[in-house]
Image 1 (spheres, helix red, strand yellow):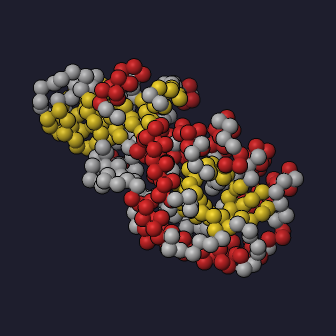
Image 2 (cartoon, helix red, strand yellow):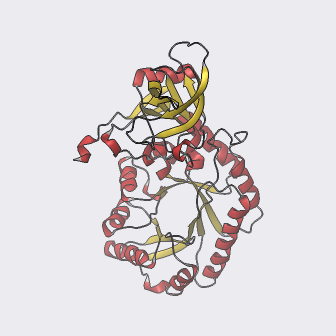
Image 3 (cartoon, rainbow, N blue to C red):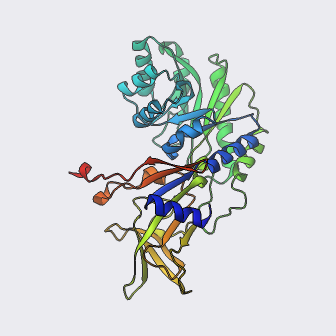
Length: 389
């Protein structure tokens, strides 16, 4: 987006605000689908940005839900139940029952006890449910290979569960395609063991490759879709016959469509350093890897009025009363003034929900959606101090 567009939006709607460019998002999704050539399907992990769920759901195959709250969002948005994969590290009885009553047919199981719970809920409601068994990645997530094979051997005890495949996610910002192919070979080996024991008509693999995205000044932005293209090339070399592969992505889909608009509230020199203080802060901006401003995100300084050229380094901080509230440790700015706009780019994923929003009882930022040249206010400024007493 152009500077004057961003400035006009900031002046009309106020700051701090998140702005998500829907057309940019949809263009990226279409480009991703073109790369995959309809051979592999996309699944959006809505935890990356729930405000985009409606738009994304109309353009890709599956939405992954990871909490009861996300499920309730989907219900409010009328996301088709058959489009949802209900995942999540822990699930309660009422959570699973709500999902099944809504009509969701596919859930993931993270443990033996969770599988038993899903089966009980399905039995109580007299329905059948498809289950993806999540293979552990040597973390708190998922089930061991040994236990998965034991589950398959005991398949008859899960009377209301239909096993349909595997779920696997190894982490985020993984930039080596050979690691992803290693994951998939692991899953395909396990799949072959499973189908030797029990018949599965269409074996589903929901796989989160954690493709890397560019966010900081030293990153390569020449082709942000290249990691998906590299993965597709390697996928075509694998024997995926009889497998329906859903590539689960969140950050990789949503990252580049977002902006964070924040105003300069103060500029000062403390004798040690020049500071630029914003009406936002680390409670809103949470770039992966940007702890204490050690990395410099792509950002713009948009002047309200033309200032004399006087470039020097500033430490850019937020409005929180903590020394940790450093967004950028050192960035050259051109004579910043109170009222100027600072725009952080590539902020379409996670920051809108991952910030420490209750800290210091500051109001939540506004959330704006640019759709077809129209601005929709998805959420207005929201006071939250009442939650803290």
